[in-house]
Image (cartoon, rainbow, N blue to C red):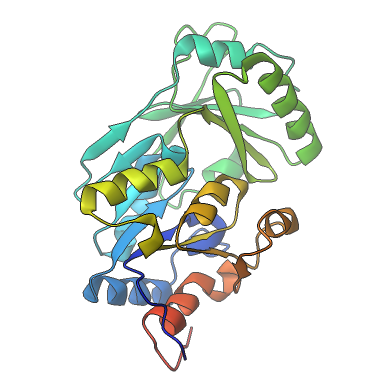
Length: 276
């Protein structure tokens, strides 16, 4: 069994990656991450989720974690200190939303303490086991302050989101870039914001390089992260198009099979016997 050499940093996405299909961290995954910490590996979680939401999840690992949230618009230290913050200006968001949006599409603005939405969604709420990041129902026609961390759209029909993405980029391509964290979830961030950029900021702070990092992801908001680290691993449950986009990267077990933890156990911690 070959152990990966020179890896000092483990970076993981949350949904579809570190979390199982019930959006939880399994006991097995928790035990492996505690072992990583005991062996002095640096741990970074990089997610599209808001920091208030993500913090409640990573606390369950019970180890120090640097948190990159909102796809890189926020960075928090293991002590929950804000190290970096970037917000979209109100005018930029207003311009992005000034397109024809199908009324069935759920629109969300990530604010600092609440998420403002045009419709309450049980499906989106289900991503939070404990509701720490609360929704607020708003009418975008009368909203005055559109300033946000990121813009988020959800719909079960991927093609509707693709059409919306094209319309927004036609208006705002100089300010924004997009990512599909899931085929049903479309997100817009400032051009300068990306998980990989934020991870680089953390590594510069603590004195490691991207070459010394391994990363795990399952979505199109993970592409730069997976491509820039020393080794990038794609989850077995990731969309086929992501696997085709990054054909040189290894595909591992699914999030339902504790794919991240099992890979770490076998290839980094060098554990001969892996149980779930």
